[in-house]
Image (cartoon, rainbow, N blue to C red; front, top):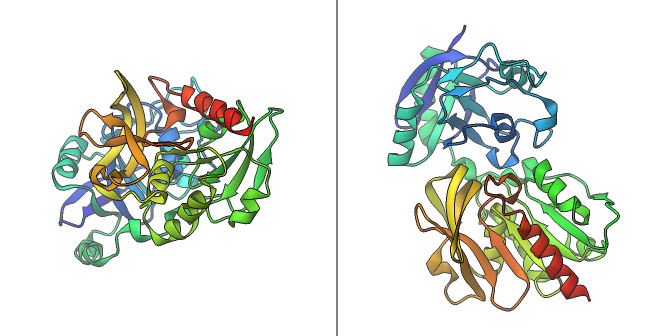
Length: 359
């Protein structure tokens, strides 16, 4: 196997073995606590810009099968694992993960003490990093990492959003518009099982949306900073203009966008929420949820707006859900399409609110 290196902006250098594409890659180093579903995670557009560390020690043991992809691409910029399984089970009939990453030109490194790396990120926060192959260039790469811009300053949503409007006719009596900031196939399937859908690029002009004959809007999950000007000048303005015309649901990144549209403020979490074991309090119940985001809504930033907090993260007390005090508009920080504890009924609630609004 070819040796390669994980280099962090604080000067940390970790040597391992390559099992992906043999090329250098730069991004924000984050970790996920998911124990399964590595293929779904790698193809989730919300991971655009990331060098992803898997906290679970063994990755690749059941290969890769096309039917589990959440998009057409691998969106992470690099993969970091403790142990890569070179001989995966044939049960799913797919290709090895290494070949999948090579096909998508994504570098990967194994043999890393991911426990130590996760502790470092938890203590110090996410940081810029690189997966590289030339040991002689490491000193220059550390300098580059310390001076390069934060990946969250990039317009990551533009990289993952659809480039054209498209429709799916499910023969339902309700039509939902989806503003694609990084939608997954699972979310699309959940919505189209309940409604016809029209999917819009994130920067679709407001008139094109209002003329599409939709009854409500879902703003999807996505990567990066929801307060990035590329987002506030497009999606946020759209939500603000549509707010009194139809019901709106924001999912994860989309929930933050909805909050900003009503004057709330967001901030970056120290190391984000990524994994399928995040506990949230909703009313008098606790749910275990799937999450993948770097930013959250400021509790103080909600004060004085037309919004109220409806859900809280048990681990760190951060906001997990908001709702409008009078309009049929709400948002979540979690991803409803990948629930281990299943709160997919939120889509049922949303469709009922649409029916109530249009009757």
